[in-house]
Length: 364
Image 1 (cartoon, helix red, strand yellow):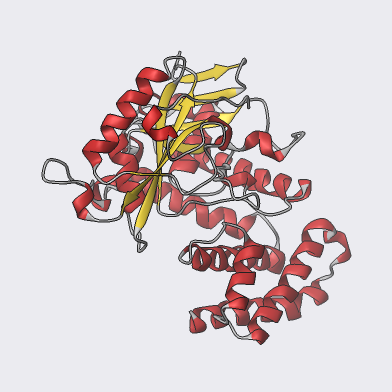
Image 2 (cartoon, one colour):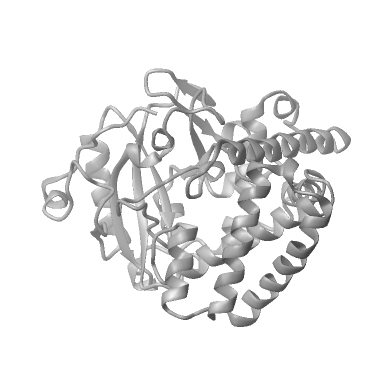
């Protein structure tokens, strides 16, 4: 995607570098009202772009200490082409499952969903079934702030402002900026409640899936206008505003949630035969757990740095660290050269990955 240099106010420029927004800890804001006023000024200054928001409990950074915002399908260190292709295989199978289930459960507004992959991907992304090339954004500052504080145990949270091209349709494709912007409220069936409660939008780099020249062109920090740091407390909202509760952001009795949970289980079970699929699934859980534990320590969002931090802090004992490293090497061989791995070879690693999974639960 094409990068931009957003415009910021003089007051913001006293704390953050206008030409390097992704670095640093973000501009501190004490109250929601104050944040609204800053964003109003930013909207006025950045007339060529439509502003969108994203809230996070942790400011994920890359090795250059810059905030990074990759769509879920592209996340990870040293991501080989084969791994990306494997993730797209998962996405394509999940999309087929979604269409299949909707064919047997007639719902209003599902006809177009069955024909267009971007709508299928939008549902799978928003209900967290699997990785997609899309990233979640919202047009609601209140929604972004609520997500930033949701289940957050840190002292602060982060709200990011992105500048995207103006929307021209329900699915807007801007060839000049190489961006796709999807307005979920216009394309999701009415039975899919979550996108409506979250006022959700999705964005992606256009015309790129698993083939790309440089992974950095997929990072949405190229569209970042400003980064705010807010207190993770009720005082932030004051007496005039309130956080949106989890029950509203994730409404109950959402039929698409149950459908997507069914898809998630089917995809995990059927994508790879036998123990290979189970190993990859368990390894993915280990990676996510290691990274999430390091997020609590506010470190960079990478598996290697997270494992290193846990090792340095002696959070895990040395034998567990060594076993995780052993599994990582086997996983790389399995992904890069699967034909070299026999069923007999994977059996001891299946035992090890189950053991490590249980040990992580015990030691955490």
